[in-house]
Length: 239
Image (cartoon, rainbow, N blue to C red; front, side):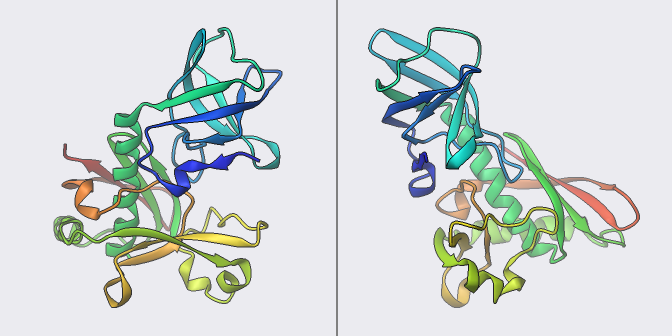
């Protein structure tokens, strides 16, 4: 099982680890990683691995068997030997933009309080699909409310609850298409705000900014009808 350093500190840009295994396809499994693995609509991280006598570009990271995370090289190249100590370095600009978009999408689910049927995150924009039979009445007003929430500079934190506690609070689950990961006995919650000033609380395994002001200003883009009840709402970073 790969230790997920990105869940402990999403702002780690570099870290050392040991090569645990190399897959038949040329993927690299470390004992601990700062690379987020593709999931929940968020792309896997890219960056580099370096070790004594070698360096390789990492295109993405994906989930493997048994709780492992596999780093996928950008192109065939010499791989670090099993047991070697490597230094991981993220493409930080790309990761941080994913964090900004992801946190903004959580707030989008607050200003549009409808069930979420899907979502996707990119470095410049993201989108949420909603169970939304009727068109938005006031997109400009929703955009203004969203940016006001961002300007509140809420702290973004995480906590853990048991599977049983989550089952007793089904209202925490906003996504209809993606179930929170269960089976480990506990589920991670991401909280925006604190106490009575909590703006959002929901299960999530992604990476987020520390404070909502770090998101910057956002713009709501086009709204597409996707089926009888579903509508897709795009969100763009302004800078």
